[in-house]
Length: 65
Image (cartoon, rainbow, N blue to C red):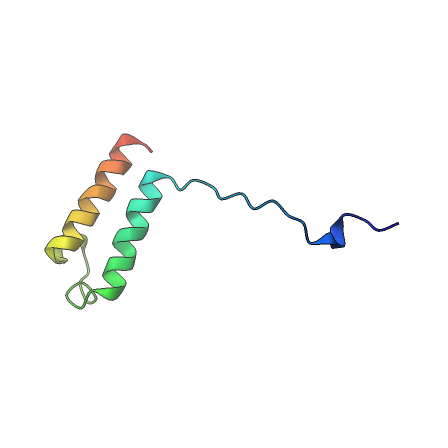
């Protein structure tokens, strides 16, 4: 009798990403790729796109998502 472990059958469940974490991830990925944002120390010193992404993160954080 074979067990169910070795069958390779699994259900893949993708967890929904929290809006706050998604916003932070998008900002973080942007800062790693953007030449203007790479060397800055604060989010306020980023390019306009980086500042917009940071504002979206702050908004999501304030909502408590």
